[in-house]
Image 1 (tube, one colour):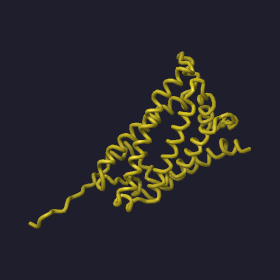
Image 2 (cartoon, one colour):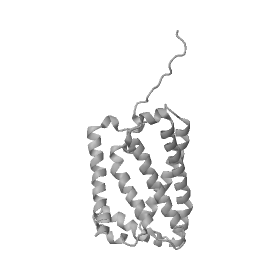
Image 3 (cartoon, one colour):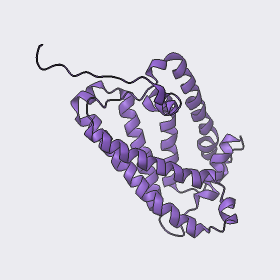
Image 4 (cartoon, helix red, strand yellow):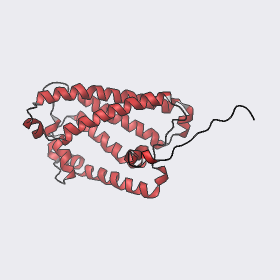
Length: 227
């Protein structure tokens, strides 16, 4: 019963919040649909942290795409064995996860240590960083705990369960034997997806269609001397 609730019902509740929340936010708060850049308050930590985080997270997302959305049968047809896939996933996944979490750590330090940024931060800004940290840390932990070459193959359980959600053929029973650390990672993603529409994360959907066309924000320095 618990498995059915966690893996058969909650995914659709989260999807409803995620999609409905974006629609509501766009209708009610179009002017708040931005990344709320604080670059003018501090640049050095932002440049380093943002570059590391985004580069790492894009690699992580690419790995998730190859592991979750591409059926295991495709790899079998290409002659890629489970062991070979596992080695490739670890080789790229662990460095990407470490890079992303270090970058996020720098961004968290920046937001909490620079007084001007902290004063202008909303609860949502802090929540995004916290939940992102939990998601990445739990995913990285699951990878390390599954480092054994004969470890758990999520392509035959989590992957078909996840794909089934979007074609309304959810199979909660596939999750019954999934290790607890993977389940913690998925539940952390539930929480993050649920707060996403109500935070600055909505700016992801402004890129590149609208974000690149937005007007520049121009800041002028106050003159030190009177003319």
